[in-house]
Image 1 (cartoon, rainbow, N blue to C red):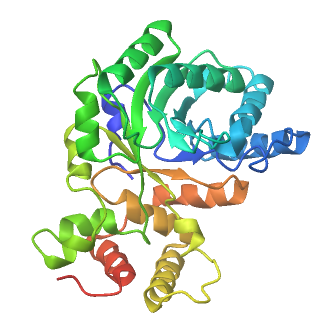
Image 2 (cartoon, helix red, strand yellow; image 1 turned 180 degrees about the vertical axis):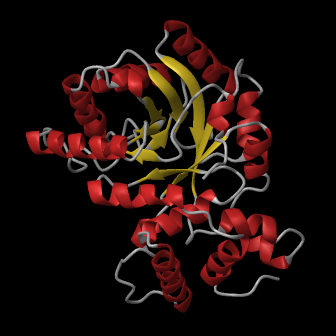
Length: 325
């Protein structure tokens, strides 16, 4: 997969795949991190490194902070690893905290700064390579975010910044107050959730009124050299072996096509699903949601797969469940 990543335009030599760390640290509860959790994290990190993955994605909320905590244990037990990898985390989502304090999004300067301090403490590192704002905050003041970013940059706590789940318009609005470019936008993109492709296909058509993906977002990212990252790139295993009882004919047909293409190339089905994403000229960087070593290795096989235009469209049309207009 020779497509250059947008991050490389900013001097960040990131791997084509990212390991998402949401599955580390046990459950979404207040139970303490165990040695078994640390062992799992070591195995996942080792599998990623063996597959050529040098970028790791976190968020302050993942398993209520335990994902970062357990990763921090790995870094402590592997001296020198921190300088060999790219660490990315997110902030901005706050869970319900009792009466009058509902679940909410918070891009206030105070919250961003305190969140980063917590992230760094849990990871046991002095800096993040990239900080993402997790989900759009309707009360966002771009100038206030800019102040937080500038302070984090000056202090050396964060090297670069990005967003997650934002539209091109929201990014442009935020960027207007920033002194440096946003580096990343992480979005849900996969072979089952096709609105990011359909949005371009259904321009000037009635079918386009039912597409939820924000118009111009991929185009903005491509023109401004913003790295597009895909969360949920494997569609929760829908085309790679999950039980398809109750699924649509389109899903079943697409799963069969994925299996056929994988067998023809001698690669796991995960490789074909990820290769479909990476074939898109936006240079999409999939964020793997698995922490199972074998599945990480299977996903890395995608780097060997280059789908033809016809194969890419065959998968797209099959998953749509209807012909193109």
